[in-house]
Image (cartoon, rainbow, N blue to C red; front, side, top):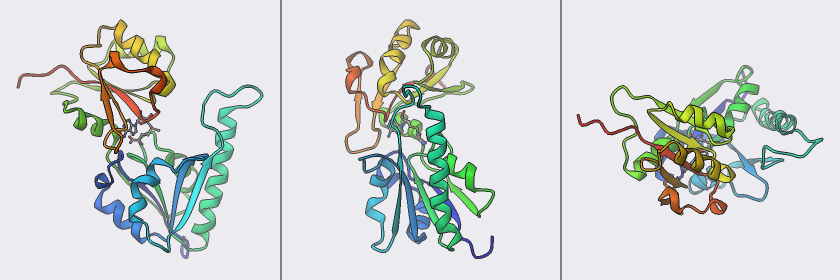
Length: 243
Ligand SMILES: C[S@@+](CC[C@H](N)C(=O)[O-])C[C@H]1O[C@@H](n2cnc3c(N)ncnc32)[C@H](O)[C@@H]1O
């Protein structure tokens, strides 16, 4: 790997620029190239978090997603299109690495927790020196903003994707001591139905864009499903233990 650049996967936290770690900030400032995954026409959440820390001579490498939804009409296949996109994105990153330039890939929250960086890591980590810097994950950020402890004593926390089919969500959530349901957006109404059906409405808390400037918390019943962003979650904290 001599002469090659190093690959960094930097967790930049859930939104508040002060929640980036000292280490991630140091490595970001030192890397000549900053890469970030972003939807077409958007600035990118992770980019917005670190924007104020960029140097004038940073080379920016936006990697623009070709699709914004997992449900594509035939003959398109989300899996095929997204895999081809990550192959191409990994090639773009490797061009810089082969030229000896370090590349910092920034990632909202933590890179290895549903982070898009994982797919670049899978393609590149065996070929290049790679370091991953953990970040403050949105679940703990959400709990902090909501002021709710998540799990007491021996309780277990279940993390669910809101994309799951309704019966599966119901079956899993019914058994949870405490839970976080991610990836809401268009999945919100389905998840809320399950929460209500299981009698968890009293305990369930809704938060969107935790720690960002436009953060919002609302009672679950008051949420308008048509306005739920992707950066939203429902937390069901564990029952309080009177220790
Ligand atoms: C692709 S995952 C990324 C998770 C991220 N890597 C982390 O460590 O938190 C995106 C999901 O995380 C949740 N999320 C991320 N940031 C959030 C925030 N600031 N507030 C609320 N939910 C957030 C949302 O449920 C969103 O759909």
